[in-house]
Length: 398
Image 1 (cartoon, helix red, strand yellow):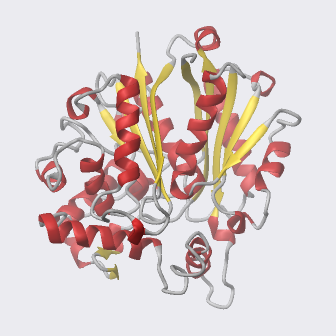
Image 2 (cartoon, rainbow, N blue to C red):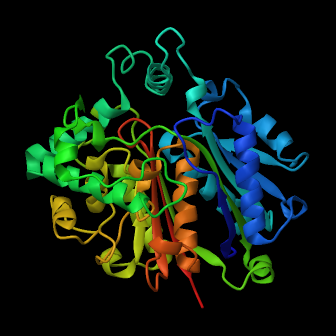
């Protein structure tokens, strides 16, 4: 298996609504940014992997076809992936495989989503339509009729975890929200950068117990892109390649009730273990410099500390209490602001978080730069109660 590096990364801003742009125009902007970053042209790209989660958001059953044409990639080979919130991470994984296998030398990864085109004109809001569309991801014969939502499904795991271990508490979850909104203040692409207090979070309206308003990420529109290359090509393109040294993935049982328990997310544990084994990591808390974790809800970030092996079971809340995951802590988490601070443009989110690690390892993260960052991790999660997980380990090797 050949070594694979990321040589370019680009993105649009994440916004609640890009009124002036279509989804394929957002895709074009992100790809142009990534190509410019890599100092390449579109003629250098040999294959493409597109991450587009939801057809209905785009009002197009095969959006990748029109993206491919619009950004000038025809007639190159291309494939689309759609694995819920893990779509972006899955797209990176597929492109990695294309190059590691020796089939291609330079690949484009593009994640894009434009959810607010799902607009309910009667209610003058996109939110009900977005939530209804996401529910189509759920099983139509059982989960759908019960009224399950993403928040409701993940809430069950947080509640079960709290009943067993006493964490995550409302206060600990609020601290995650404060951290990630604050981190987003230094990220120019973020949708929701703001300075808020723990009291602001605790006093915000209840959305789905135990998640209050500020415990939730915001749905976003945006696009992010990466350029991956084989070792030989990477060394020709840049003197600062960022190597993909670990890749892990897992897909759990579709119905949470069929799983051994809902207190832990098996797919995340398996994906992290596989990625660590591939990268030669035995103590992630000490051997990883920063991580971008899937924080669609604050409680999920705390559970991810445990699933990703940063601490023992039931100790995730301690990491946020002690400042371990803050900027300046032993393992900063979601320096970009994560999904809570940046927003969740579903197909693009994992690509955006990978871009953040790339910039950090190249020393190009500006005001939010983590000093001497050499190894980073991305956890990309999607589907009912964390059905899919992709974990990536990136490294800088001088």
